[in-house]
Length: 235
Image (tube, rainbow, N blue to C red; front, side, top):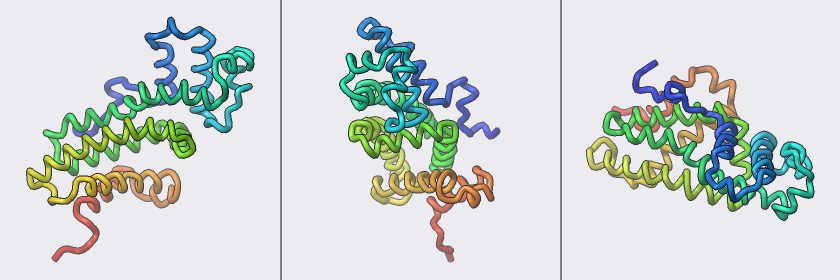
């Protein structure tokens, strides 16, 4: 493997969001403020929401998975949505978002060593690997973000905004260095993000067979080349 390739497995970091969330529950420092039944409900909720999604999970299933009576859930939470907001949203902000951002931070920390093409290539490779390892959970997370303002705001206030800040710093520094054209940083960021979204959509949703005609590395390389050099022939 190319030494510049960002490889999480070498550092022993898990890429499974559900496992990491459940581990986080076990490591909560404020356990004294939460009863064992509440922790069981939290664990069961995370497991079912991550596996089936919010709407497909019933309170009866959560109770069964948690080993408590269904009535116990409603003594702690008024509704299933209250569980989502009281349990999943805070955990998303405190742990899932840092989990998602961790690799992005590490890649940007190495920016002095790499060209823009190398940085974007590593980002695309890493994000595709993360989604591949957590495809079901990513689908459910995006679905819930679409229907629940609180989940959407949790993602925007953490993952998107920090990524945008890191990207803006990189873009502006490379514009000053002459590596990138003097374009608005928000437009450059939008182009980078849109190309990544295109890769994800064609790989997982719209054209799986067409995407598979080339290796993932080839698809990333072509996308980065188009992003940086365009599609028009140059004289």
